[in-house]
Length: 315
Image 1 (cartoon, rainbow, N blue to C red):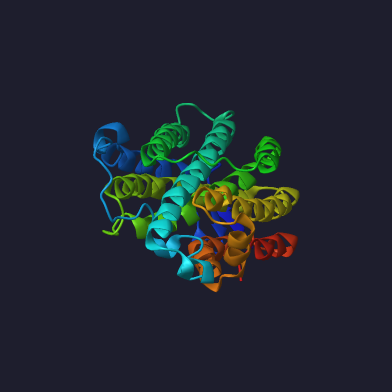
Image 2 (cartoon, one colour):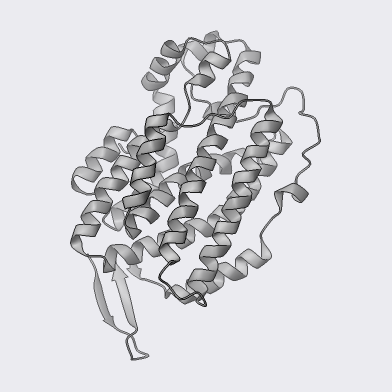
């Protein structure tokens, strides 16, 4: 899958290759990301109008991205109930985002623990951690502002993630990072320009999309490097853990308590979501850019690929 050749500059430097071509040098990638961070970072407390009232008739999440959209149950629901479900699902997704970002921050700290603290690579990781702190606070504030409860993931998956992040290898950490970032990012790219959506939600998603673009670039470059340089056992473990993470992610994506909180029967709603061709296509579309990338660099192989298919995120 990969080859390495001596760098033209000599010394110990090497040019690493994978199926996508030569990898960029770590310090150069980080320097560019640091420059972008200096130009395009936001303070949500100052950038957004948190005191503005919600606008009548506007959604808290695009209806096409609501889990029950275009199901028989959705067609029976009055518009007010549909909009209320969108409000609660926005809170569920914000809660999921906070959970993933807290895990990501821990994984990034582990990644840089043994690396040079003066390097651009470490400086950017610390910059990203600061971004994620602001994002988590921003999402939490949005949940409170929307007037909904938070929706934590089920306890068994919360505890499973505690184990997975503790034993995760470096490539496994970056693969999981991309899974948590790219599907939500795809949805948010559809949300922030949508004038049907509440201005505050659009503002939150805009900030997150701009800053997450850097995080995705950092994780993709590092995962490519790790899939070239890691020993075989670590690459194989990454394929399995990445597939299992995809399964957990898909199960936790929307907390089913949202259905009860808007007056629906949980069992009926969950069954219709699972049977929904529209929902299946939404989730696969959100994951497609990521799964194409993971396939190209050799992550989607063997049992790991089967786990991805069982998650519903890969056809």
